[in-house]
Length: 255
Image 1 (cartoon, rainbow, N blue to C red):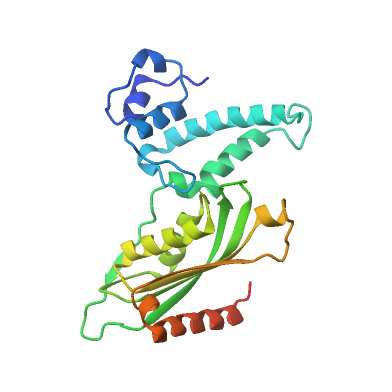
Image 2: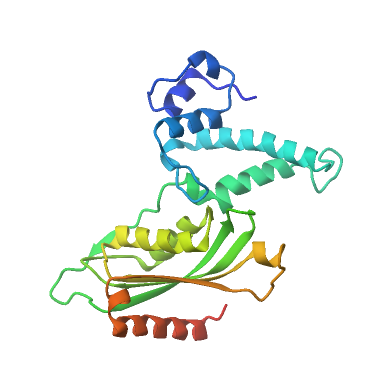
């Protein structure tokens, strides 16, 4: 097991009191963080962001080291020779780095910095904006890939964000273990937070590895989810314009 210093523990627990320092002299950093989240009543489901508990890259590297050890055990239990099989040497660490730095990075990294620009002048933009964002996520049930596209629509409020930020926010929400229904809600909430817009819509269409690679083996399966708020929900004209724009974007950039 990994030994970490008193400084590491203090930082991981943000100065809080441990149940028993003696019990954590030889422990995993992940166990200390898990203890603190439970004590703080912080939910840490697969789709939740827990970046406030990962204070720096040093802590993330230690968590990757610990996950590497765990993945080595998984490979051993699967009876995979990771010592002499050239394709399996180093696989445990590759898996650990992939989870923390790529497919579940949205759990461990803070939200993207979405610089806002004022939209409150006399000639402010009051029209509809629709952004297409490619997504890769992971099903939290079977840890299979979810691949698709999110269409984000807003009626501009008093501030705008750069076009790339919509995709950065959507991808940050997606890089976790989640369900597509939850993902649509997460993207809508974060876009509202970044822009202040109350009139917005999020439409996601995606394929799911848990349907394609196992179970029903449905290779033509496509799942669609929609979240509509404000005028997107209440005004038929706005709703129609949003979905008309989606259709145009699909013709321009088919999946």
